Amino acid sequence: MALKCGIVGLPNVGKSTLFNCLSNAKAQSANFPFCTIEPNVGTINVPDERLEKLEELVKPERVVPTTVEIVDIAGLVKGASKGEGLGNKFLGNIRETDAVLHVLRCFEDDNITHVDGSINPVRDKEVIDTELQLKDLETVTAALEKARKKSKSGDKEAVRKTAFLEKVTGILEEGKNARVIDPANDEEALMMKELTLLTAKPVLYVCNVDEASVKEGNSHTKAVEEAVEGEGAEILILGAAIEADITELETYEERQMFLEELGLAQPGVNKLIRKAYNLLNLNTFFTAGEKEVRAWTFKAGSKAPQAAGVIHTDFEKGFIRAEVIKYADYLALRSENACRDAGKLSVEGKEYVVQDGDVMHFRFNV
Image 1 (cartoon, rainbow, N blue to C red):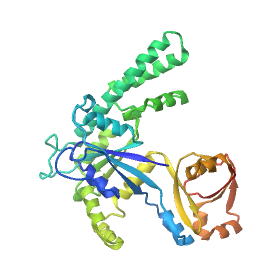
Image 2: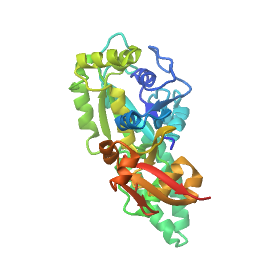
Image 3: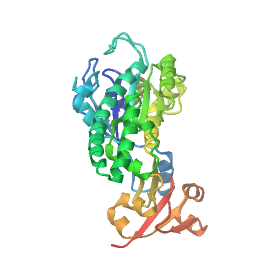
């Protein structure tokens, strides 16, 4: 399953530095606006301790982690919804992503210029929110006009759609993001999905801080926390410059020593990737054999045939059954055969809801 997160923010807040830390691609990073013009796309391995444990137990020929696509999108400026700066291109790039990683500058540094001349992450957030809301209003207004015309003929579906679109319009006009709307039923949820609104996308606010603030945050991060309260969004405090230093260290031991000196248990980018995963309601199942141990991404709540389809569409079409071992059982008993002998391997049918961490084999016939 391809997951694409877009890194957004005003120019010069640390987007490309963060992208460089996350990705095996390298974005240009410089101290001037619009350094990134074409969106850079990189692929990231999702860190998962369970995959490492399975590798130790199975000793396969290869290990394949699940991945995330990260897109570094050009910095936005005020007026982007009207085409200012790289406005339309920027907004189009966001529309193609599944989730948004919104980087906010929460550190002071006179050597790094700010497009608005001062450090105020709440203001920066509001600039981007406003531009996205204005673009969404264009989308909703056009859809509302069509729905109203159709509803005049007495079309009940159009009447319901008009009412829903009027509700969305009201939210956007209040300066709120569409993600605060909780659809009342499946029909409204489908209408919301079809609108593909920019402000309906899940968002993680990444507060980019200096070294002194990486553990506890600072006054800027606290202001951001207050500003996003009730929005249904998450916040992560991270030092992009520190993460860049970590990636330059050659060995695992050196990286761990550096983290210990900072009082951190793991790199911030690891937490970022996991939070992005949670943001999209994603889980992981595993396949484990001598040739390969592999992690696969699936939507939480998926049933066994849909999970099988993540591997190959033929697996879903010809699904017969799934053989499932819980990760905790696999870890405790240390092999598939031991789990089978202990009665810890279950045979599941089409209605089985796959759980995070399941170790699975699929039987199919096409």
